[in-house]
Length: 226
Ligand code: ACO
Ligand code: ZN
Image (cartoon, rainbow, N blue to C red; front, side):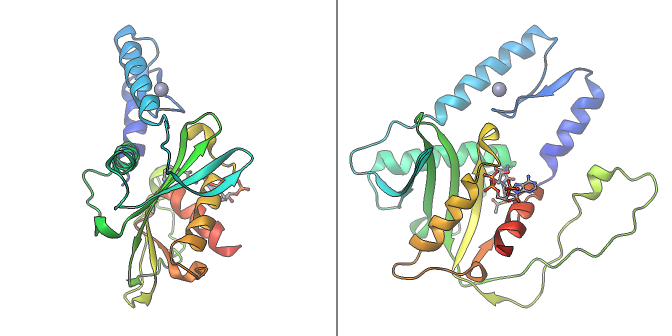
């Protein structure tokens, strides 16, 4: 899970002038024409994949001043399911997931946050689960001298060995780079809590975030406190 951040650090050291595109996430050397051309290509393909055309019977589960949340279920028409899969692939790629299979595709619910500009700026994949293991507070590790503080952030989380009952597992949550810190993730989780299980509003205890990244952990910690 740390490979992508690690790559940024390495790239920064090996190629002077490497930059990370805040919208498509690609690392490239601005001074190199080949790199720039490759970036433009990747950038356009990335944005194209996030374009939302929509369909007649889309399931809008929430509307906001800056967009809406659309829910896609496994039994939906092929084109809807295909869009959910395509977006998940983009997200997995950015998260560094390599072919992480869904535990049960027939029970997967995909929530897409679509901006007024018809772009998918958020994606949340939720699955039915029965139990989860709590992430334990990290022990205050003694900072070993000379250790990169960036690497320290990436210590493996400790999990309890005692399973706790849960209902909904968030296997992916992602927000477009330029749309972060505007409450998109928060609103997607709120909507999951009210729509995942018919007729009940899930508590934060009943929702589990699987294998969170550092960003995901910061978000989940904050979300579950409030
Ligand atoms: N650092 C510190 N606090 C954060 C961060 C962060 N990077 N992200 C969110 N928070 C906290 C803040 O307190 C924030 O409130 P504030 O902005 O008023 O301070 C609160 O959480 C709510 O944040 P949102 O705006 O709702 O979160 P956002 O829409 O930016 O999405 C997300 C958060 C999904 C983690 C985003 O940063 C992202 O896509 N990151 C890259 C992909 C990723 O790592 N996803 C998590 C994978 S783990 C998993 O999928 C189970
Ligand atoms: Zn880009």
